[in-house]
Amino acid sequence: MTDRSNDEWLADLRADGDMQAEAINDLKHRLDRGIYYYLSRERSDLSGLSETELQHMADDMAQDSVLRVLENLDSFRGDSQFTTWAIRIAVRVAISDLRRARYRDFSLDDLTADGDFLPASANPVAGTKPPSPERAAEQADVLDKIREALADVLTERQFQALYAVGVKGVSIDAVAVELGTNRNALYKLLHDARRKLRQHFEDEGLSMNYMLRLFQE
Image 1 (cartoon, helix red, strand yellow):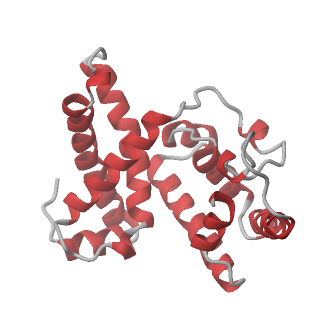
Image 2 (cartoon, rainbow, N blue to C red):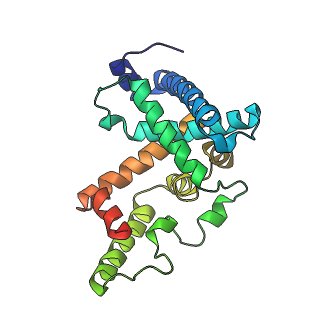
């Protein structure tokens, strides 16, 4: 692995071609080690798993963590070492992944055939107080805008990848195999898809914080 300063990490991860690919591989390796340490030393509930099983878990989580780090590069302020900051993100990803079931067998055609474009967190939860008529109308309007954006802004390939990874929680490697691509190319595909959606919503006057609050409060 190459030793890098904070500025070098940022520059290399934002670069194109071989330079970015090498930086992504180095980052993934560091996050893999950090997550494995967390799983093996900090999670007593996983003590029954073998070293091989923990390593497989760490590898899967590290792949997702690389994507999360790439999406949040602009939020790094240099208050710590870049790798320390990235490992904190990776541990949060690991905690989140441990709380939810992971999809194993899947078909991208099945995932995108039912028109359900949003995570379950955006849908009403049974037993919760229904929103007011005004809030329900606002939610419906935003849902329509999200569906339109997914259909109009993204390519079919971007949509399938984003839906599988972001909504269904399928692993990066499984989606890469299904799409006939490799991990680094899929990272780039997902990064571009989310950036396009974020820019589209900002152009429409819809901030991500507003949309999250609309469905979570």
